[in-house]
Length: 194
Image (cartoon, rainbow, N blue to C red; front, side, top):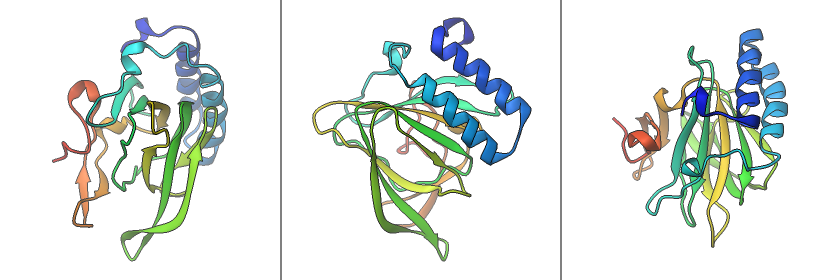
């Protein structure tokens, strides 16, 4: 998606977020002020293009909405079909997750001796709610669609081009492995890591 395709709330968010990342690199300020911007964006869902709201039958989708030319932030719509979830994973950069439609369950993990361990805590994000992730505020989690009968959509803002960032996940044997997520339009997913 390019700038010419942006309209209304999405264009305003991109302009405001570009100004924000140009004015500070302080993570606390980025998370606090970025949360306000994302909150305005997810007040309604009419701005999201239909092609970026499409659920896939076999895995969740990550649709790139915008990446800053200097890779200071990216904006992605995540679309979760019923029963779809991520493995336990990290982000390595700051991020904000705003719930647009449906609901999303997040299971929290902490690194203990270099290994992600469940905290026993989980929460459900409802439309309009936002949570932060980063190595400083909590970076490991597993996310799933909390709706059994329909898709859920969350809007994610990350402090880099998240589809190009080398990150980590727990593989089927419980070992930490690296991955680069890419984006759905480019065939990216947790199943396609180096």
